[in-house]
Length: 334
Image 1 (cartoon, rainbow, N blue to C red):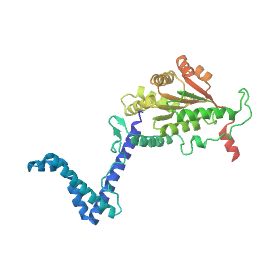
Image 2: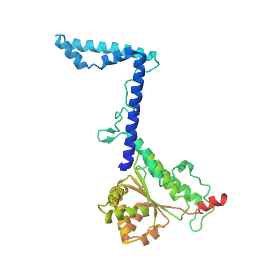
Image 3: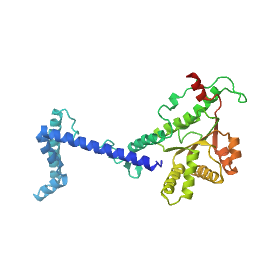
Image 4: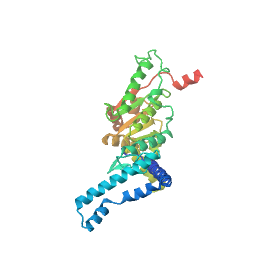
């Protein structure tokens, strides 16, 4: 799950800050405990003497190493028991001054070998949602807050079903796609329909759920995405070009890309090339993509190259949105 470098950096900083805060709190607690019970400091110094040094001392005196180990173990157990009693008398658990890591799996490093630990994954998911919230209103946008009330139950002309019936199906697909991300039968979605019918809202719901489950998600509009591909090509070694190179890597490599408002961009030969690279690379890399557009699949096929149309029609599952503009309905109810 290739998280954005900024997301990983902020999550790592939070992990280090939490670790530092716990160290400082343990040290403060230790100083306070030593002041109240000076014997604790003496015990800790004795316990910190390593087994190797004590055994070496016993050997230098000509003692039996097996007996030396047994003697040291018994001595340490006695010291630990006395220490636990003293800590208990102050209302503290016996490991209160030990500075144990919050995550026993990785020792608060965030990594288990080359694999990211789940503690760092959780922080990355939180930071990723913050990043997504800059472009998507994730405050109230969740599957639980989605309402069907704005979708008519009257059959829609030319569709054979009502907007409510259709949206119940669309909602169910989006919910399962997000909840079973990577395991759901559908890999790529094409959300198609006029403005104001919930495409962006459901995209935000998918982004939130997939992020919370620990996968990397990037959301952006078609215009912004193609602008980054253009900067990568024409600015090259300039600072903006280097930044665009990193951005396009995010688009190409994240677990889930949500490409919003396809068709709103000025369609040129360059944007067609960029769109083909994006769609094809993600298909080849087995990365998941959700595209939302005011275009129908037929209109997209007419607008873009045959190669793009073939991949959209052959690989993407179309979810149709139709009904009355929800924004206008909400405005009318005010």
